[in-house]
Length: 434
Image (cartoon, rainbow, N blue to C red; front, side, top):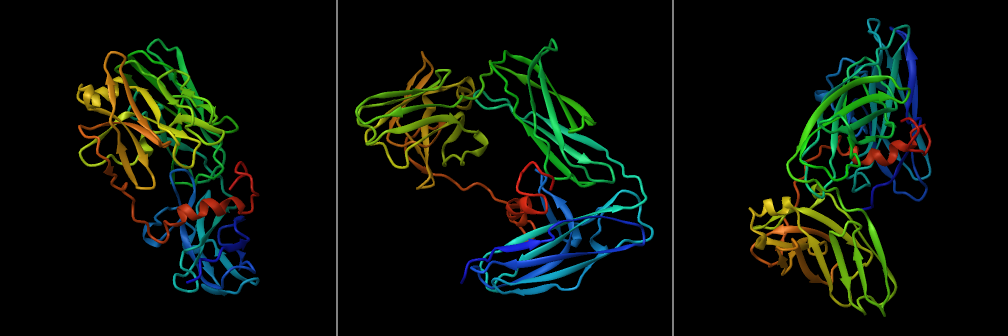
């Protein structure tokens, strides 16, 4: 069966002002390129949803419960289209705004997607957002922070602040951003962070999440305060909330990236700037000049531990070589108090491990443990994602796949539209409004 044709759309965004009882039309022109495959597409009107990071996504009627929905106000003159490569067809949307429409904005999505089994083996979709301003009314732009979460503070991992925010007004707004500060018990500033202005509009009733990672350095045990603000680029503050987190043992931030150029005729040692991680390469480890990089890796991106083992707190990545080293390197890691706590205080259970992507499995290596210097050492010819593992065995185990939520055809566009929305009447720049 032929691969899915890439659907092209012009008229891929509607923004208009309509008086109560008034009407407007919008034409969406759909095509596939001359070198694409003929395909059948369906065009339908859906509710206006958003993912946590703001991407527009269609809602089916059962989930479209917003009082600001325009889904029922829009009719289409054609619901199914056969697209021939190099040619285009148009669909006209007729928008009838009810006489009793209240103030603010009304929102819907025109959802264009390929029909499975009709010349395409994969779904291809385009989301056309519809923004209606109710003319002659006063929009209300308000918002509320529902939650500020600092997560679990782990040695060697970034402190991640997640701010959950809801548009509580009756109108959309662009360029919302999040400012976060971290202060100690004396009120002294420890770190701050700010997101870039959001390129997507936040739709009334929808909730998004802002994620920041303040550049926190070493922290002593104690309680720290997080202050989070959501505001517009103009400086208008929607809401501000605080939370606290507690550091129980000395906190050390993630490793910073470092690299080394290896040559076949020389040895080399790649060491993290703080000295916690090092990789010693013997002469002849590579067959050509190669830049090897050691960089941080987030624990929440790690594959699940194999059966009978569990992940510690330390993870990092070594990259730069597509294949294997010609000779084994020695990897040395300073384990943390959180690693030791994961092992129940028994350092002999700590092992170095790397993830073999080709086998989709963790490889737990024989590891030398030095409790005096709190280090773990192992040899390997693999450059990969690494982690401290708690295990009594060094046998490689198959990693269980991470859980994946089942997606409906509509929710599939959360992924697809992130590639397409950028071209929706706003240009190619991610900073332009969507």
